[in-house]
Length: 104
Image 1 (tube, rainbow, N blue to C red):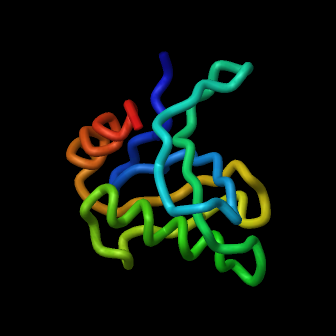
Image 2 (cartoon, rainbow, N blue to C red; image 1 turned 90 degrees about the vertical axis):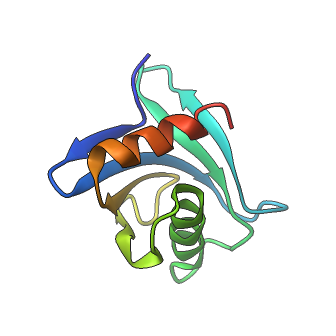
Image 3 (cartoon, rainbow, N blue to C red; image 1 turned 135 degrees about the vertical axis):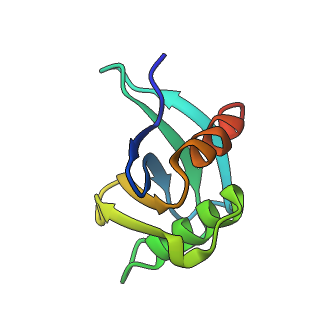
Protein backbone atom coordinates (compact mmCIF):
# COMPACT_ATOMS: atom_id res chain seq x y z
CA UNK A 1 0.00 0.00 0.00
CA UNK A 2 1.45 3.35 -0.98
CA UNK A 3 1.52 6.36 1.30
CA UNK A 4 -0.45 9.54 0.57
CA UNK A 5 2.65 11.73 0.91
CA UNK A 6 6.24 12.21 -0.23
CA UNK A 7 8.97 13.26 2.19
CA UNK A 8 10.98 16.40 1.44
CA UNK A 9 13.98 18.00 3.13
CA UNK A 10 11.75 20.64 4.72
CA UNK A 11 8.59 18.58 5.37
CA UNK A 12 6.20 16.53 3.24
CA UNK A 13 3.98 16.86 0.19
CA UNK A 14 0.57 15.40 1.04
CA UNK A 15 -1.76 14.21 -1.73
CA UNK A 16 -5.39 15.06 -1.04
CA UNK A 17 -8.72 14.44 -2.79
CA UNK A 18 -10.92 17.35 -1.73
CA UNK A 19 -14.71 17.45 -1.72
CA UNK A 20 -16.00 21.02 -1.32
CA UNK A 21 -19.53 22.05 -0.24
CA UNK A 22 -19.73 19.19 2.28
CA UNK A 23 -21.92 19.15 5.38
CA UNK A 24 -18.89 19.53 7.63
CA UNK A 25 -15.10 19.84 7.58
CA UNK A 26 -13.47 16.45 8.12
CA UNK A 27 -10.79 14.01 7.03
CA UNK A 28 -12.14 10.65 5.87
CA UNK A 29 -8.95 8.58 5.95
CA UNK A 30 -6.85 7.38 3.05
CA UNK A 31 -8.08 6.05 -0.30
CA UNK A 32 -6.13 4.23 -3.00
CA UNK A 33 -7.03 5.15 -6.59
CA UNK A 34 -7.22 2.67 -9.46
CA UNK A 35 -3.69 3.64 -10.53
CA UNK A 36 -2.37 2.53 -7.12
CA UNK A 37 -1.64 6.01 -5.77
CA UNK A 38 -2.97 6.89 -2.33
CA UNK A 39 -4.45 10.18 -1.20
CA UNK A 40 -6.06 11.58 1.91
CA UNK A 41 -9.80 12.14 1.53
CA UNK A 42 -10.95 15.48 2.91
CA UNK A 43 -14.23 17.40 2.93
CA UNK A 44 -14.77 21.09 3.59
CA UNK A 45 -17.90 23.23 3.86
CA UNK A 46 -16.37 26.00 1.77
CA UNK A 47 -17.32 26.48 -1.87
CA UNK A 48 -14.68 26.11 -4.60
CA UNK A 49 -14.62 29.82 -5.43
CA UNK A 50 -11.77 32.32 -5.07
CA UNK A 51 -9.64 29.74 -3.25
CA UNK A 52 -12.07 29.40 -0.33
CA UNK A 53 -12.04 25.58 -0.40
CA UNK A 54 -8.22 25.51 -0.61
CA UNK A 55 -7.94 27.85 2.38
CA UNK A 56 -10.37 25.68 4.35
CA UNK A 57 -8.34 22.59 3.41
CA UNK A 58 -5.12 24.24 4.62
CA UNK A 59 -6.75 25.05 7.97
CA UNK A 60 -8.19 21.53 8.29
CA UNK A 61 -4.84 19.84 7.57
CA UNK A 62 -2.96 22.18 9.93
CA UNK A 63 -5.38 21.41 12.76
CA UNK A 64 -5.37 17.65 12.10
CA UNK A 65 -1.56 17.47 12.08
CA UNK A 66 -1.02 19.96 14.90
CA UNK A 67 1.09 22.39 12.88
CA UNK A 68 0.73 26.16 12.43
CA UNK A 69 -1.50 27.27 9.55
CA UNK A 70 1.46 29.09 8.04
CA UNK A 71 3.24 25.72 7.57
CA UNK A 72 0.52 24.39 5.23
CA UNK A 73 -0.10 25.45 1.63
CA UNK A 74 -1.72 24.04 -1.50
CA UNK A 75 1.12 23.90 -4.05
CA UNK A 76 -0.54 22.00 -6.92
CA UNK A 77 -4.06 21.29 -8.13
CA UNK A 78 -5.51 24.62 -7.05
CA UNK A 79 -8.60 24.18 -9.22
CA UNK A 80 -8.65 20.37 -9.21
CA UNK A 81 -10.13 17.86 -6.76
CA UNK A 82 -6.71 16.19 -6.46
CA UNK A 83 -4.29 18.52 -4.71
CA UNK A 84 -0.76 18.53 -3.39
CA UNK A 85 -0.46 20.18 0.01
CA UNK A 86 3.02 21.10 1.24
CA UNK A 87 3.53 20.90 5.00
CA UNK A 88 6.71 22.34 6.46
CA UNK A 89 8.30 20.72 9.49
CA UNK A 90 10.04 17.52 10.56
CA UNK A 91 9.28 15.00 7.79
CA UNK A 92 9.40 11.92 10.03
CA UNK A 93 7.10 13.47 12.63
CA UNK A 94 4.66 14.68 9.94
CA UNK A 95 4.68 11.23 8.33
CA UNK A 96 3.68 9.65 11.67
CA UNK A 97 0.88 12.19 12.06
CA UNK A 98 -0.43 11.46 8.55
CA UNK A 99 -0.29 7.69 9.20
CA UNK A 100 -2.41 8.26 12.33
CA UNK A 101 -5.10 9.79 10.05
CA UNK A 102 -5.12 6.72 7.78
CA UNK A 103 -8.08 5.14 9.58
CA UNK A 104 -10.15 8.29 9.26
